[in-house]
Image 1 (spheres, rainbow, N blue to C red):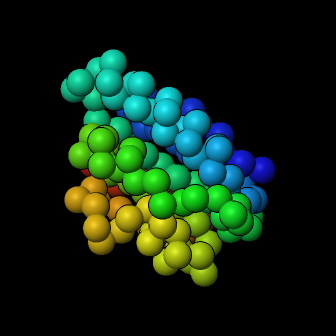
Image 2 (cartoon, rainbow, N blue to C red):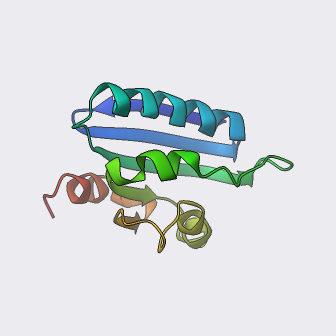
Length: 122
């Protein structure tokens, strides 16, 4: 359960399984912020793969938008790969419609399509 992150060429890949915990998300954002501060030209393409999603940790304060306000313009694109039944709520959580970053949802069997879209090959 939780979040695992790794970089693959020009992609930052986040894999979320089970229950999303606030501490896990905070740790990811802290690491990304350090990378963005260290390299002022860096723009991230983020692939978020969600499997067996159980929701968000109850009782956590999910209203902290500081990463979005400080670094949101440095996220080039976000692709969400998730069960279509959960995509709408996940896209809302990710700020679809309010952030300028293009967000696109893909079905679980479309990981390669998501990567192509992120890299501009589609």
